[in-house]
Length: 192
Image (cartoon, rainbow, N blue to C red; front, side, top):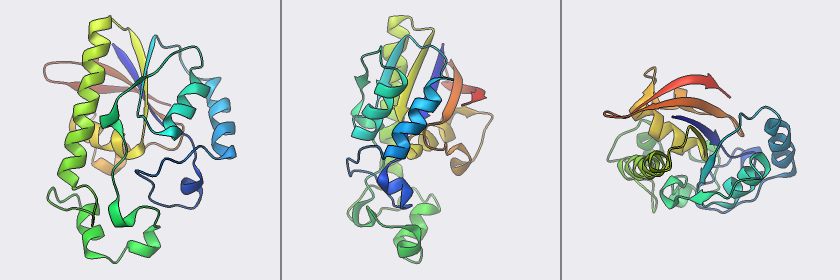
């Protein structure tokens, strides 16, 4: 089975370089235009899963208008807590931010998720996608979620093995992966 793992298109927060996790932003006009352009090059898929966030629903609707997406709540972006809507320049010196960026499993953002909680949630959500796709006999599906979601999933089971931040896709981009189970591995076939 193949899966296209895609990040949502550009939001107003992306344009301002803000951390946007639980804020349910729509796509910016630039994001809608980018998704329409990317649609031309998208391989055909049989099924579609998404994070329930508006930016993912809108991106999926543009890229795959013929499919009804299945929402997987655990594929949501990180809850950035007190850092939600802030830029790197505003929070870069905060000790909690530095620990979280360093990937310390116990590190938690003030009033947000810990690294361990976020990773576990994203990986649990992705397992739901794999189980549903396998039960449907899907040859190729697509999943539209968030940059952080894909980094958390692919750091664990992406091949070739890469560090967390080297799996960060650009907006409305991602990866075409071959799914292998027992143990779960996602082999990179193409960057989209």
